[in-house]
Length: 165
Image 1 (tube, rainbow, N blue to C red):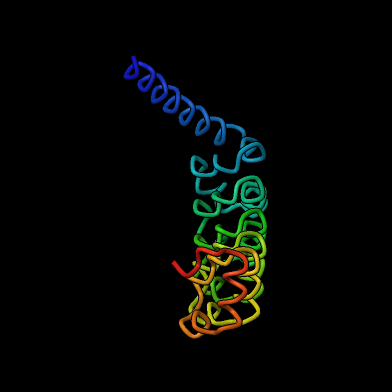
Image 2: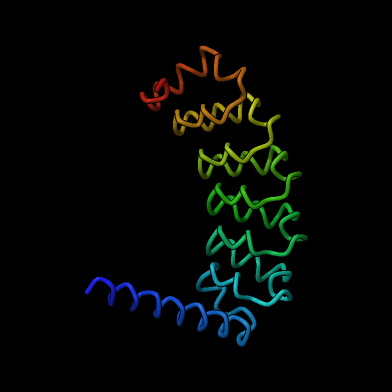
C-alpha cells in the first residue's frame, strides 16, 4: 500500500512540475508572484527579468539559484534574497559573498549564512559576533583566529552550550 501512496505522490509531483512550468511560461511570470520556486521552470528571458526575479526571491529565497548569472551578480537582487533568508548567500556570486553589506544582511536573517561568506568576512569581528549572538553554532564558520578568541568563545557558549562539542 505504501508503494501506491509513493507512486501517487511521484505522479502528483510530476504533474505539479509540468503544470507550474507551463503556467510560468504561459503567464509570463504570474506564478512567480505566488511561488518563487517556480523560477526554475521559467524561460531564460524570465530568469533574466529583474522585476520577475526580485519578486521570485522575495517569495522564495531559493529562487536565486535559478536567476540568470547577471542577476546573481546584482547586489540589489541578492540583498532581497538574503533578507528573505540568509542562506540565499550560497547562490550569490563570489564577489557578493565578499561584500560586507550583503553578508551582514544575510547573517542578520540567518546565522548559518556565515558559512557562505568569503574567508575574509569570516574573520570580520562585528559580523561574526552578530552571527554567534544569534546562535553560538555560527562559531564553526568563523576564521581560525576568532574560533580561539576567548570573547567569541564566551558569547558562542552562552548562546549554544553545545559549541565545545
